[in-house]
Image (tube, rainbow, N blue to C red; front, side, top):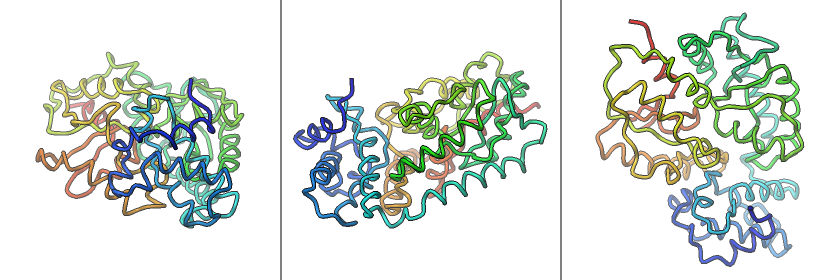
Length: 361
């Protein structure tokens, strides 16, 4: 059983910092103030009223991607990332939130609505269904992936899969990570109402899958459909996945475990099984993989609050790719795909790879 917030803050404050080596932010910054224990100690002092109430004092609360690497090695089961999101909410309520997140609720809603509209430009109208056994939630980071996923579904004999007829193409994770729990709850309630007609909803964003599975109930928002990540859903049909006879051999591509898909949701095998189908020889693994996988720098709204640090985290993740002389990374997260496409490396989404491998000759 995980300790509650107060117990977690105390444990982290007096812990000998056994998780300090895991934090992507402190590894990039090399500053003692942003190791997990120090960030939790800062939050504890703030809640005890022993910290100056200003933006500078709360800045370290935003030095976290929510990746969960520190939780993976914690002997007490503490989840600093999740608690630091609460600390950000405290800072926001007192008017000391991060300046880069000003107006975030309106920005997230506008982006979610724009993403839902964008999906309608690439998906035939008849695939949008007000109710269905299975429906895809349009992704907010890569709306075109919706059309690609439908193509793969058609090729595995799952033509019944539709697209959710919604006005919001995002589960609302950035609101939670940014410290706006009230806006997150309102967003969750609106999306939950729009998803009432579906039995299962397939979501491409691991962070939003986590938010919808874990945080919707925690915020008192009932969600009728079962929520699955795209890789979970497609893995159920793996024997029906018609890989082209001329599918290319295993390239020197690395597979990157998204933090929220892996550590937060425990989904490691589904994407690998699908990739083995597309590449019989398999793909390359990073030296730090699965539960020890390094973050791409895209979570926790870090690219907004600490863009230079987020870039340094991404560069650190790509070091091994460059050392191996590789130029391609495959992942199952649109955010990671965007982050890892740089410096001569191209990151590809799992569904793009499957669509290519199953293309008729």
